[in-house]
Amino acid sequence: TVAAHGSTDEGQRLARQLLARVQAVGLPLSVGVAPNRLLAKLSSMHAKKIKPADDGGEPVFVLRTAQDMASLLRDTPASKIPGLGSKVEALDAVSVADLQAFDISELATALGLTDAAAEAVYERCRGIDSSPVREVVPQSCTVTSWLAADAFANLAIRSPSATTVWVGGWA
Image (cartoon, rainbow, N blue to C red; front, top):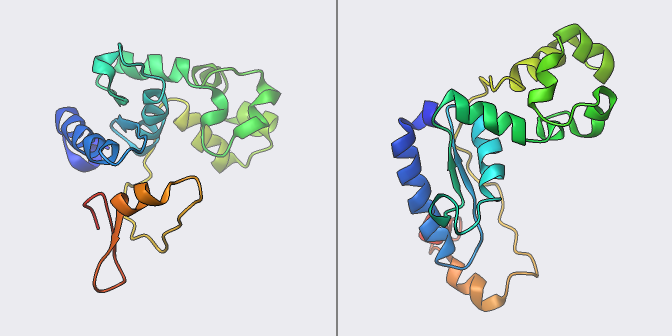
């Protein structure tokens, strides 16, 4: 997120570096750069829709302005707000922006949420999220059968310590 790592330009530069390294091993990736964790996640989902002719063809979406945020919230399904899912059907809200028409008590009643959870939804549908971005040390590594053996060999190299897996050059 921009809040954790600096400007949107720096975020876009890092996103492009990450994208190049991951795509070099043949894996798909989308990246969202935004001022907070929620908007970065929603931006990443939006970036998946970017076609080669759009925005230079990179699956990177950078949220730069309030207008960008309003457009993103208008284009994002309401069910994508964390913790809501199909509950939004009770409100007949299609987009995240549609949820902005409801106050906290209406959200709590219609969605069966506690006041605290309804307040979190109220803030999230306005692009407000104070949850921290933190570095997480992976606890495990899983290989799925859809990844061809030769592609995985190019992707992951076990380090001599056998506790670190290097993926595309990162530990």
